[in-house]
Length: 140
Image (cartoon, rainbow, N blue to C red; front, side, top):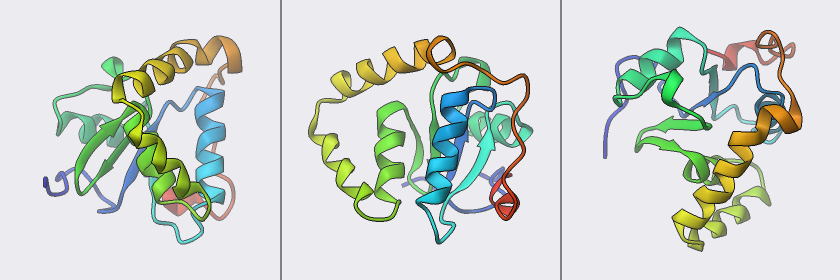
């Protein structure tokens, strides 16, 4: 088990997301609404925080085309990140973790199709939106 990277200011599970992607921003709003205890912190892939966290794992935002979860167990991306995030949400969302039984190649292939088409299907924003009032402290 890998400890927290030095770059993590929150020392809590951190979700890295594409800040200009409408689907990603909607997913973050959904995560916040279903994480009432504030377990997760958030940072856009375009931020210095994300750059530093990814560098701790030999990655860069430019080569990352998925949601990323950095937690005490390390870096998780694509379907692994999505399922681990669901596990940390309010009930019944943790039941989605049962999808871990689907072979990773299949889960990630479906994830990749969505990730590669997210801008075309859901659009983009010119800038990363500001956090909703009351959630600012969860963004790094």
